[in-house]
Image 1 (tube, one colour):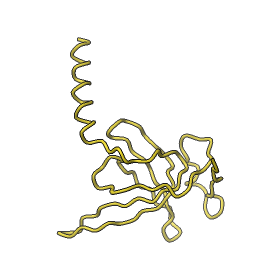
Image 2: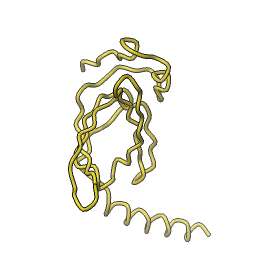
Image 3: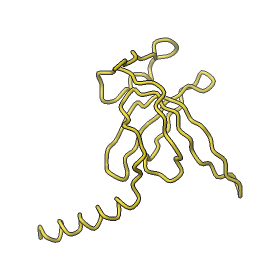
Length: 122
């Protein structure tokens, strides 16, 4: 029984390594990031830049996701992105923040200057 599980894990690990991206920077909670995402509209493709703050991160090897929050026309917008998705072309860290929480869901209740995070300098 144990050997079957171990063998299955080896196979899935090999498959996941094939699709994993190696050029992703180390992302932490509270980082302000800028991402380039490939958007399909009909038969056309374009790259859209998205900028926001990482408020949550869920680690699960190939299906690792981040939740990015940004303010658009005074309305908070959150979106979950797969880090290893082929639609994400690049991720750039704009600013690192000093936070003491694993999830920054409290930012949903705040607006304006109250949503600012302390900058990490090292």
